[in-house]
Amino acid sequence: MYKRLVLSHAAASQQALVAAVASSIIRVLALAVYAAGDVTVVFQSADTALTGVMTLSKTGSFISVPLLALGGGANFAPLLQTASGEALNWTLGGAVQCSGWMLYDVLADALN
Image 1: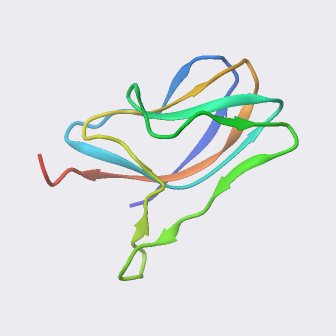
Image 2: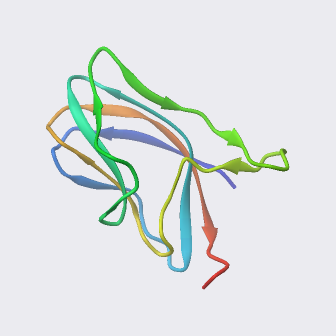
């Protein structure tokens, strides 16, 4: 079951977007982020970077839509995926309001 999350953060710090779930992975399927000014953002599995440092600006935004995985249907290829049992976090590089939305799911890790 896919879940939606409203993104809203304005502090230069790490914030948990989706809390860790034991023996489960968090998959980001679609994402839109808008910044009120120039700021950097990094998405993380706990403290491990899932992306490089991305620069957002007031004149632009970051939008990524899901891609269908092989086999089609409602099977989305994830944009980002945490390690098993780890939270999905993001860290802003400055005190700039960043807002948007995220579509994600949480799946039991079959390897655990």
